[in-house]
Structure formats: structure tokens, C-alpha cells
Length: 137
Image (cartoon, rainbow, N blue to C red; front, top):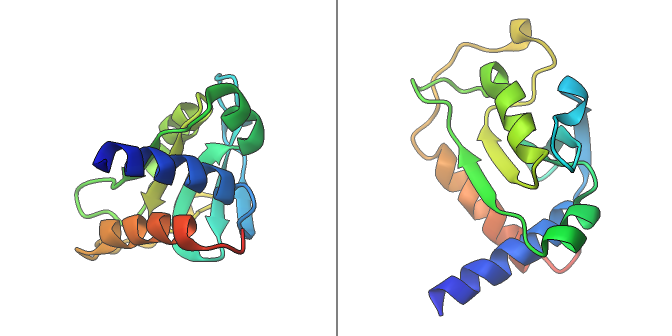
């Protein structure tokens, strides 16, 4: 039962992210080498995180049926994913959705050097759950 719930959650989340309100985007390495060119985005409902995902989620879902979700923390208490953005964008181009701690930065110089609060990953998981429950999208 738990496995089925997670599968349904992943599928519904995937469909809903495609319609969420994006407020900032970044193309990294021409979208990666996978079948689904990826983008990094800031969602209005999750401004302190970066979502790396296929640009055309509907196409990815149509071909893959479901997209796996990865919640990313840089480690070392760094509140940013900018140093791994090429890796995360590449993974996303193969049909993954990655929710990464830290705001979307256009350059390394924009990175604010601060520690990540302990509950940041829980915020990402809560956001994923809300995407499943939110009927507006």
C-alpha cells in the first residue's frame, strides 16, 4: 500500500510541476545530454529551492510514465546547489525531478555563504506532498 501511494504521489507530482508557477529559470549546458532537455527553475511556492527538471515534463511523463524525484542537499551545510548544477541538470535531462536546497543563482558570485537550516529537506518533502494535494494545478 505504501509503495502504491508513493507511486501515485510521484506521478501526480510530475504532472503538477509542469503547471506550477515558475518565477525564474536557468538553462545549464544546453539542457544536458539526456532525452529530455532540462532546466533549473524557482517555483513561486518554493522560492528557497531549485527544481531541476525536464523542460517538457508532459513529454517525459508520456514516454516514461513516471519520473523519479530526488531531494538534494549539497552537504557541508552549504545552502546552495550551484556547484553541482551541471550534474543535477544532467540527471534531470534523463527524466528526473530534483528538488535542491538553496535559491537559484545565475552565477557563483550570487551564492550567499550561509548554513542550511536543519529542517530544509523536510520543507522540500512537504512541498512535494502539497503538490499532490493541491487541486489547482
